[in-house]
Amino acid sequence: MSSTAIARDKPTESELPFVTATVSYCADIPRAQAYVVTPEKNYRPLIATTVKIRDARPIREQLDLDQQGFMLIDHKSSVTHLRTPEEIDATRLLA
Image (cartoon, rainbow, N blue to C red):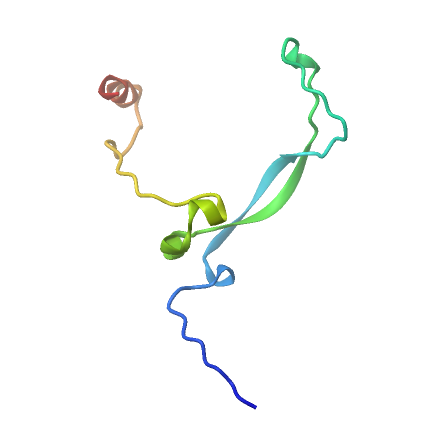
């Protein structure tokens, strides 16, 4: 018998840090209709589901838009905190 050692320098999905949260998803309704003119007729029951939300930042280099359907990019904000209405209004002037 032979064995092969695999060196890993990146964490696997199961090793990534995560938080647990409840997310509501639309229930699967066969033949559901969408009313555009009268949206109040739309009925989409929600199902609360407990999910793990993983922090993928440690493996960002491995993520590809074509493979995983998303990618992580950095963003620098021009503000640090928005605690007052004045701070919020000041950011609107920058846009």
